[in-house]
Image 1 (tube, one colour):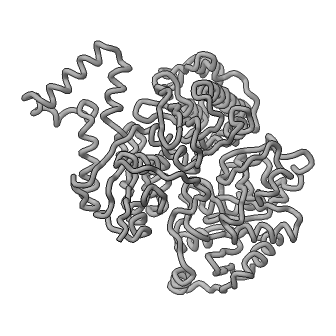
Image 2 (image 1 turned 120 degrees about the vertical axis):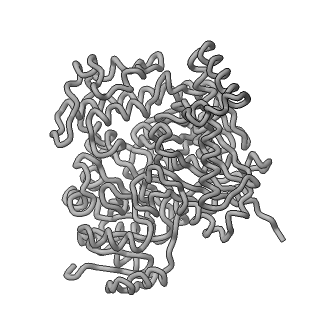
Length: 582
């Protein structure tokens, strides 16, 4: 009988933890290979699920593997509060570090222990680990017999990208706002080992914090939509006093201010935008300034990293790795001459995967070489389960044969219908990739605007993206390379913009998912059938959710969203649901 090694990775922080208790998630490995992973928000139906423990995500992973928590050999956590506290002390200088160490010694080993309960966890960071163990005991009955490994936040990000890339050698870069007092790191991945080359202290600079600062000034609906707004603006130098690209520094003291915002910045950029205020040209220009600074900072970090490692094969993770415009420019540069891989769940939730990899290695097991080729690691449902839900809520439906689906759906898209598409397991990461998608005709801006007004209800400036046949990329895109996770932008070739106007941004770029038939044959065949009808080998694809909600996870979620929006049809597995009269 073969004994498997199961390792669970989790991302979780209570809300009190630097206000970053978002995106709880879980990932499960068997013998170092992915079995399942999912974000808690998909189950609890709260965007980013701040402060939730990833109970449902863990339970799903265990069910998918067919095991109980007692069969898990170790648990990895993508935060290390003890190491973070040590790093914080070192950044404050020798005197403060010495005083803090003396106080901690007293609270741990002398009668001063009696007062430790009245002090914040920052004085005794190991209590945060005890708190996590208490959560694991409360929810799952996990005792101290199960090893719990704590990993540096950015090291977990790095592991999530490197070990899923399939690269034997890589320059690994992580970047986000804040994690264990770092804003990023550079590592060298060689033959299954990760070596940290450089840490990027949060106190010196943070691309993610700069993005948050501008987001709080502009008060748009989401942090991630500033990249789209930048395409409508012109850089004016509003951020010059806050960012020094040459020295790789930022005025972190000023970026921490928001009420009031720094006086010198307000003199240049004007008063902050209040809720309900119209977007002015200066707001668009500020977004363009932000994107320019992010790209300049990012390019310089990559240049230094490649110079240090000598490896022009890149892996990215961390929330700033979701900046598709920056990813595209770096990916088309000589710095990525030998390839680039960006972990599709680049944000904090993705750290659960990295923590699982590192915990597996901590047990003394080798991590087998593997390439993350798809993101369909969440819950999947059979046709029987889908029909049972439809029967329960008394919704009429039609069952299509496998051979009919591509023809029926492509025909509806060509007739300007908007279709909900529910297949396979739900996606790992924030991008819909042909499992929990809304599909439409990409050829005109009219259908794009109807999707926005009738379904997505989102900001007018946010572009929609296409799913395209992988072999069509060269025909439509400049500098194309394989990009399966809709996380890289490319310039659209001259003469093709009008042909696919619904998915071209104001700056002439698009953010495609390149679809391979061996990864998602039903989706590929549907896009190909649309190409046979229209001559265009791509479809408009956006996430299956309403504004402010997570992507749908279950058939019930899909039905609720379908009947709450202007969708014309819904395809769940082989089951077709339409609205009366459409």
